[in-house]
Image (cartoon, rainbow, N blue to C red; front, side, top):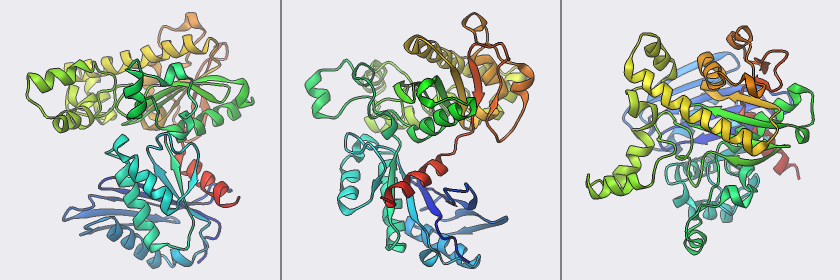
Length: 399
């Protein structure tokens, strides 16, 4: 069975592997899967192909073993991926540093550069590179393209990209605001303009990518002028397990007074903070249930989350001057009805009015949730990073 012209999209984490095979023209998803707990005694695999789902547990010591098992599952479906006519493999790479500003065909030189800049994203880039190498070893004849999370924000205005740090130190160690979730922000901002029937160059919008990782961007005429994530994906909004904005002096306090190492603080800020650190839970559905039940810790966590989110919405309204649309996307943004309502509550004076009935609708499609007389359109636009990566990969290999 052929899947000619389709793209295999790969998102490799430190102990996980997400993948999807899709047609970038028709948008049909042919296969979808997730491998978890790679390197542990019992890895879990969920594999979906054309309506049929397979679940399996196996011992997968590394990503190469995980990819090999995925290939076996495709073979069981009657598909030889290596000889199926794939147009390309698209790899999500989190950090492009100052080296990569657009989707890039992967060569040995590109691999080396991704490795060189890995200290900028030590939790992400090494894992992304492992995925590139593992898939490349099994599919050596299929062109591979790296699509960078930071690319959309590579041209941020200097005043938004620059930290007020000693300029020589910042230059030597590549310290600046890079921004992340760029593939999602670019895709969603363009889809929002299409939904409104307007050219993206005429639309000013605030895009709110709210998932376990969360970020906001101010997009003027299709180009970002600011974003919440910074040198790393730690800065900005309160997230599932990440602090978001925090006084850098907290690092000094925890080091000097608590005796914590840099590695311990890194883990604390990235994996044990955010909503989880505030109330012991980072599943937003569970948090909302606890809030409804009167749980004090969950209620405080929710209010802290909203306070940070509203602060950035307000800041970006000022930066943009004119706001045509506010767009919610990603898991929380697309599904958490109270978050959308509470994030924009009381802003009628700024021309922002949400229709409660429209907001309550659940749909996989882009939709308007503001009232007809709202001066600012409020939208829910499901993100599709896999489709964006697939299209970018095909565009590169077709040149």
